[in-house]
Image (cartoon, rainbow, N blue to C red; front, side):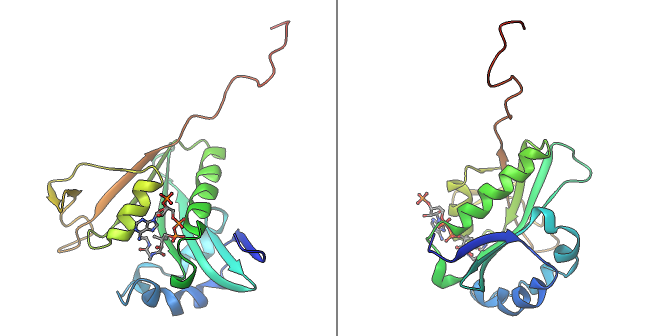
Length: 174
Ligand SMILES: CC(C)(COP(=O)(O)OP(=O)(O)OC[C@H]1O[C@@H](n2cnc3c(N)ncnc32)[C@H](O)[C@@H]1OP(=O)(O)O)[C@@H](O)C(=O)NCCC(=O)NCCS
């Protein structure tokens, strides 16, 4: 990462900044409605911003599942187009995996749109598997209508390695 780059927790005050740039970062797709302010207010412990020289150049919104105690979920990740390919997405994912592990989570899920081939490639590189769906498009399994009529999704899952339960240094008395 360039000097002056830092990853920090996402804050409620980041909402206006992210919502102003999100559609542009997604290549003109309308995404803003999928990221309401509540995510910035209620999930800041498991969400990150990347700042470079004081400007927000990346963000990740994720959370620990309330209803599935082994699971965590990444809802959104975005990196400024001019800052892609510098492992900022990877750094944020690794940060999220660490937080998830600390909270005892061993499964991370995410979904993306089948048109988002960059996201599919990125998730594959981050170690996610594509869950089987009822259809396939361009060789990728999809869940038709997963998020409503016409809203097909590719569903990802990643199994985190279990954290060590044995002591790092074993005592001769045990
Ligand atoms: C997807 C995204 C977050 C990746 O961020 P990034 O910082 O550029 O990714 P990184 O530099 O950390 O890349 C990590 C790995 O993923 C690969 N990767 C990332 N984007 C890729 C793409 N578009 N196509 C193919 N591979 C890609 C990299 O080549 C790298 O692989 P390597 O280990 O073999 O070198 C970024 O492209 C983005 O913001 N896209 C628009 C928003 C979006 O679609 N978000 C995901 C859905 S919510």
